[in-house]
Length: 180
Image 1 (tube, rainbow, N blue to C red):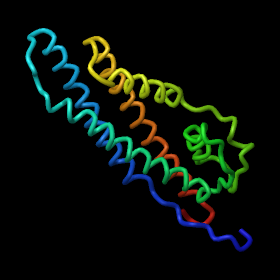
Image 2 (image 1 turned 30 degrees about the horizontal axis):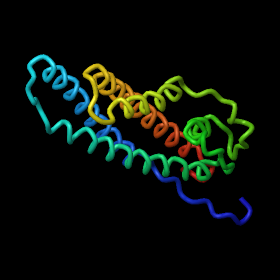
Image 3 (image 1 turned 60 degrees about the horizontal axis):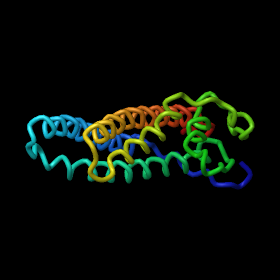
């Protein structure tokens, strides 16, 4: 590698596990909110106010852990033989594409940039945004319920993406010419 220092691959498993746990806890809070929202509507009681505090807390914690995971996944790419920098709006998809364990070492952007990404990558971001928007402020029961459902779907999609990219990067690191 001509005098350049190759930094050691940093595993994603720890941040991925923490993200998955927090995302699942947030999804459970959304499920409880959905049920308590229906209960509030039918019975007119206050139900569980704690869930109104738990939802934004889990959303914030999940967002922070996702950003930590994302940063590590992105900074791993040069360590996985992918030296090219990426256009910011495509970072998420580029991490998926460039983490393909079957790509040669090193690999030019032209070899992986046109690869497709799974449909869950296309669905996750708009689902997460729609769920967050629907959950802002007090709203009608249907809007609140729709927000809860969208956030649950977004959590499932995000966890599946994080775990899949984590596995891809680990598999690519094992194939590294310097022994992962």
